[in-house]
Amino acid sequence: MNSIHAVLLSLLAREPLSGYDIKQQIKGRTDFFFKINNNQLYPALAKLEAEGVIRLQALERETYRPAKKIYEITDAGLERLKNWVLEPGEPGDWNEFLLKQYSSWLVKPEELIPVLTLKKREHEEQLDMYRNKVESLREQSGLLTSDHPIFSSVAVIEMGMAFEQANIEWCGKMIGWLKENRL
Image (spheres, rainbow, N blue to C red):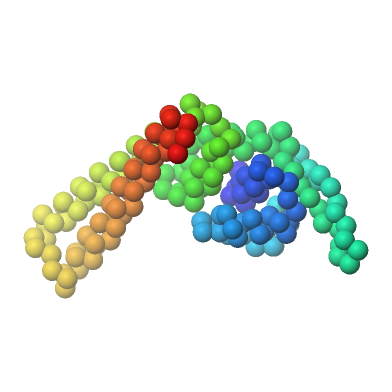
């Protein structure tokens, strides 16, 4: 499933919405990690409706405006979204991972914990790789001063290490929250 379809289904899993309302929800809920424009939104809604994963719930008409189409997710759409949340994502695809976690409330904790455990392991492996790279660069270069080209390389890898560590910690917290069934 592509990201646009995932966002639309995850919003419609929460409540029926019009295209305009979906756009507003995206601005308020997912805009910090996923953006969509009108040229993508309405064709995606039409495609999802043709696939039977959403349906037109109602047409709301105001006298001075065109009718507003209200969409809702179908049972098939809900199942597709749940299955997608549990699919292993591409390593390093942070936005897809965030989108999946945005809809993680739909799946059982015992199904989600193995997915998060795998993701945590991926971040641990990446962190180890970064650590080995930094150690190797430091051994090759000796003392790194700010005017040395390797200085910048190590600094960037250190940022990557911090990112991986944050992901490891978050996955651990999420697993704990799921086990306790609360935040």
